[in-house]
Length: 283
Length: 108
Ligand SMILES: [Fe+2]
Ligand SMILES: [Fe+2]
Image (cartoon, rainbow over all chains, first blue to last red; front, top):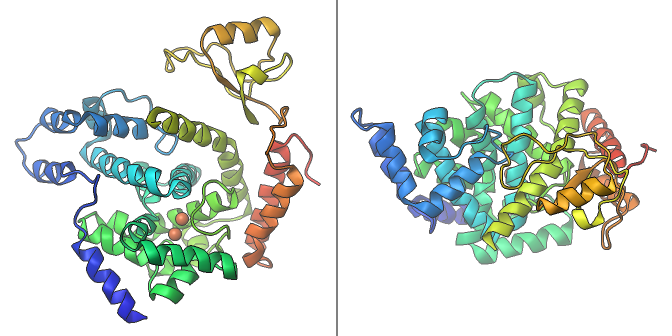
């Protein structure tokens, strides 16, 4: 089995780009290291790709981010900062792949983004934007498995149905690795910051995370909440157990959990509405 | 709470979300949440090009839609791997009452 794991790891390492992941992320990276580049120049680069900037703005205004109405790319740059815009560009590109290939996972991720925001607000945690991105991308390993290992991915689905098991257990059994580890490899090979890599790589094993345990715990809980609410489809219907590490790190208790669940329940209809709107505009 | 096409809107249904102009979604809302619909109001909203509304309770039964009973069974199934864990049992109870309320019923 670990042979299979090594094979997957090699292939992921070579996956420097995906069809719709634009060179723009790389360009922005290079430019933001250059002191002389102005925000306006960077905004111009993103605006030049009209399809991309439209998608990015739509996502910025989605319930998953919950920013106040942002109408232009330079607006976004000034109000949200380069880092947030970069992560928006990346998420909107990955979202496009999900939308076309794994619709249920797309809704699951969108919902996890909303849930993560609710958790962060309820617990008064800082750096909300990064949390949205981490939650939106947490199952990115599934996307890459689906794209690069089509047959294996189909076999996983069959195994889940036949044995009524967790998707992740099926992954371990068939592949010797899981989408969290795979997503972590991918995020690392794309030079994403640790604060995104860790929540992606450890969202099913919070105790494995290091410096970003709080973020990882938030994403872990967001995943559980959105599965409990049965919004979207992430590969299996089964709600994972809240890990003691997450409960401890975030100081969760019944009151907090029910507050989060109630607010999420209240927002589901807005997420559904947004998801329908997006499908309408695309179709 | 239910999202319904405006064609199914009826007087006395209560808005669960404010309604905004489709051509100016960030402008002031046309009517606020909590407002009860009336026939003239529905006609006016239609004229403005509004296609759907979010209303309180679950007033419209759509064909193919799951009943509360089926939804509660699915909830049990979703939590079936974590029964006996106190926090997870609590969470299941919370989502059960949310589901019941969303269908306009009291939790059993
Ligand atoms: Fe996951
Ligand atoms: Fe997930």
